[in-house]
Length: 149
Ligand SMILES: [Zn+2]
Image 1 (cartoon, rainbow, N blue to C red):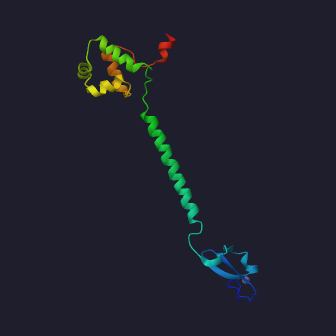
Image 2 (tube, helix red, strand yellow; image 1 turned 135 degrees about the vertical axis):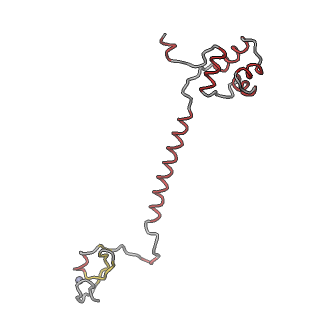
Image 3 (cartoon, helix red, strand yellow; image 1 turned 90 degrees about the horizontal axis):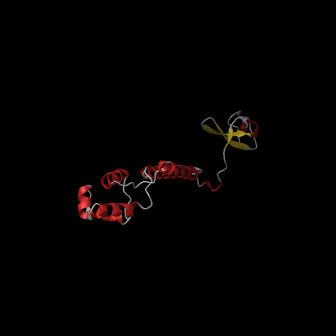
């Protein structure tokens, strides 16, 4: 076999990568190139591709997880509701002598919403909490400053 780099006759040649081409060179010249990984069975292709794919999928997966967690956090209400808020709503409404229908009309919400609120089956968004507090003249939020006063 002739070395493709120095052209000398050599008993053993080594396949090395020199820049972009693969050359069969003698052992003396092989140090100038990058040794090629042996390809037994010559299945070829996809060598290392699977590992790369998994890595990319992992990155995408963790990215989506972070997005989901942030979205959930963004949807948490700013106000900390009084543990008894639903009972307070009902008591305050009854104190005003309003039925659930009348109260619903007053705050511009459906009766089903009023019912859900008073049974604790629905956590009101901040805007509705403020509306309830204004209309019923009760405090539905557990505020730290209340404890300080
Ligand atoms: Zn050589």
